[in-house]
Length: 121
Image 1 (cartoon, rainbow, N blue to C red):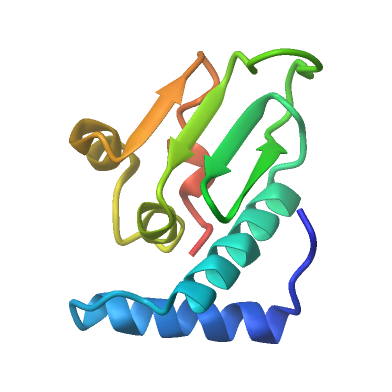
Image 2 (image 1 turned 90 degrees about the vertical axis):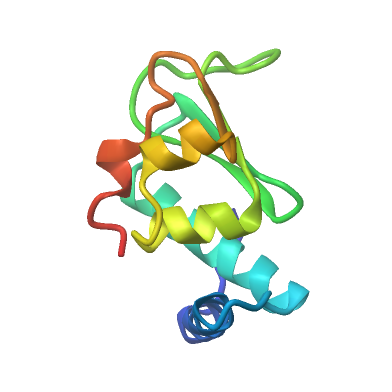
């Protein structure tokens, strides 16, 4: 994932969290920037290629150490929407609650991000 200027990424993330905290929706450009920023940060914190994390339309990364996937559909995939992703990485939404609500789909034995999301805040 292309690196985003940390100040710009953090500003977008803060603006999104403010909007969400007030019960509103973040501006699209800020939302996409914040998601890309947090995806890149997650990828750097958990290097590897065993899990593909998809947050359309913002982006996708491969992260977490383990067997590398090279062709076809990856065996370990996590997919969610931008708002859910931001809530997960900032700790305002628990992994199990997002999965139960159906806002996250996770397939594969490495696709549970619970332990990786702790400490991302």
